[in-house]
Length: 321
Image (tube, rainbow, N blue to C red; front, top):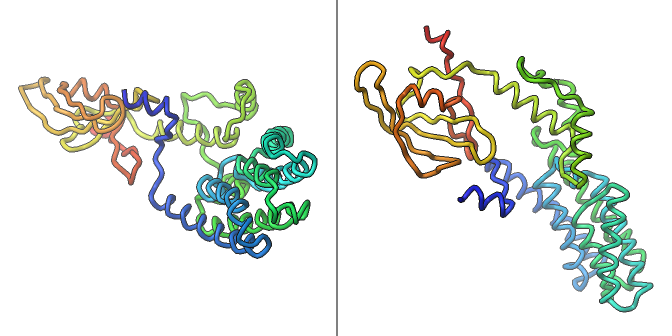
């Protein structure tokens, strides 16, 4: 029931470390601090909260999701600048904010779609420009240059410089791709069919909707997953130990992690284990299985790594003989 609710609510449960979250917080602080100071200088106290609001949304993307498609430099720059141009134009041509504001946002969405620079905070920039407060009206099209383009430049420079200190989150994403090209990931393990770049592009095109991931990311995930899947042999029942955690290796709602909490021996071939489900399907339930049946259910041993479950190398049957 709970996994179903999470899926319906659109809650992403994939694990992220505390270090990554703290880095995002620090980056957002420094980026918006500089943006706020520049906006206050050019707009004064009246217009600053409006324009900084859209930049605050950009900070979430640049520092919280630096590798996302929506976070890259062209979506950032194009999304804000185009939206500002459209918003100012609507404010000048349509004196009624009730019409000017929604039209500006709608046209900004269309422009970002066609020019491939979708950046959600751009909608807030179009909204602000079309609203036409006194300070923004006074600037006219100068509003597009200062503070919008200036603030975009500032937060872009901060994002590039700040993320550079953390090798796992290069920005722009092309820097991370070049690093992977210098040290390519291993090919899919034997038994797994290789998937071509064109296959991923075709699959994405068939969805016919904007997805914040590209074929390069999907191929890397596939390579990591298939190579990792082959890294250990079959799980031997003699390696199932009290207090340890095991996963069935399933995907989606079928995934589960169980911990061995007790065991009993009733003669040869009659060993049983008592387990509790600590994650995934059936969480907070418990059960009893023969050791042989449990070894058939368990695909590999796992350990808790911060908020993630990480696989542990388990000796194969041949190694244990």
